[in-house]
Structure formats: C-alpha cells, structure tokens
Image (cartoon, rainbow, N blue to C red):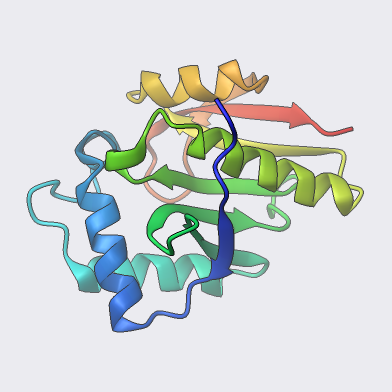
Length: 168
C-alpha cells in the first residue's frame, strides 16, 4: 500500500479546526472509552480545546494537525520535545480519524515523527500506551517500539506501557 500524502501544520485553535477535532475524537469512541477523559457520545468542543491548549502550552509541547491531499483532517499529533523526566522527545498522542483507519496514516505519521527527531540528531523517542488499549500497543509494537517500563501516567494515574524506539 502506498504511503498517504500528508501535510502537518500547527493547531491554531480556529473554530473550524476545533470543530474538525471534535469530529476526530468522536470518530474514535474506543480511545475515548479507554482514556476515560471524554464521553464518546458527547465530545465537547470546549474540553477538546482546553486539553489541546494545555498540550501546546507545555514547555516544548506541540500540537500538529495532519491533513490529506484534499485538506481533510485525518490525524492529530501531540509532541513533547523533551520530557521533564528523561529529556527525550515523546509522542503524547497520535490519533487517526476513524473513517480512514487502517489505510497507513498512523504509520506515516509515526514515520514523520521519527524522521523529524532523527534529523535533529535525537537518539530515541518514547510514548505511553494505556494498558486498556491493546490495539494501540499492537500498533506501536508492529512499528518496532519496545516496552521498557510499566507505570501510571503523570496526569491521571492510569496504568500504561512505556515504549521506546531507538533512532538511527
């Protein structure tokens, strides 16, 4: 399957972008249930906006929108340049629109992140997967990420697998 053509741009918090993001979250009810932060039947725009503003306001935090060749929002990336505990870059969230899952978009987004941090000379990258989200763990494991720890996430105390990938 050919890699999808994607463009990444910073979230500017326009009403149009927030509406698109609500649709993105709504299209992922499994994630909403696993994370426990959103009611999959009532994803609120003010909550999505507040959470993403917090992500982007963190030191080294970045929220990126992924669009396909037609300009449709197909994914979301939340990145942290340097985690306060280990100094490594982290993927805080990678979400693909439910309508286009299993079409290579998640793989392409992960590859873009890896290429970026490799180009910056970074040695590795990390992320955490909720223990109650086995599909996400399978996805990342298939891409060569390895579990290095199990611990609660910093913000909500949810049990997580901490994964690491060495970068060339």
